[in-house]
Image 1 (cartoon, helix red, strand yellow):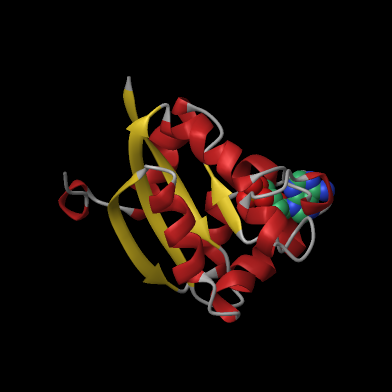
Image 2 (image 1 turned 30 degrees about the vertical axis):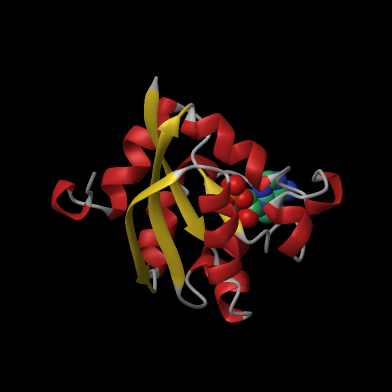
Length: 139
Ligand code: CMP
């Protein structure tokens, strides 16, 4: 079944001009981009986006990092897009990421791990409208 997932190319990757390389990996995997924009998140937006992690010890640092510079947010579509994109990203901690994954290629560490992707349909259903209106999604 075709589904949509939400992606962020995070500040560490945009800062190193890696957005083109990461978008190429996404497109080469067969996922279709149905929405994309560059934004600079406010601290409040980052806190709201990661609210599920607010009790975790890394929450403050994560929010500081996510609003430290521009990011590229996008919506990807395809058969099993959520699990396919998570496979393409690799493990959260790049030390555990498989060869050929985005995080293995580009992530700096467990926080500055270059990309985010929704982990379940319920999460995608919250994350996509957090940053995109229906008018910004095509295809
Ligand atoms: P992401 O997939 O966006 O989901 C939560 C983010 O928190 C994660 O990627 C990392 O950027 C960050 N993070 C920092 N430390 C940890 C940790 N110990 N475990 C999980 N995520 C972490």
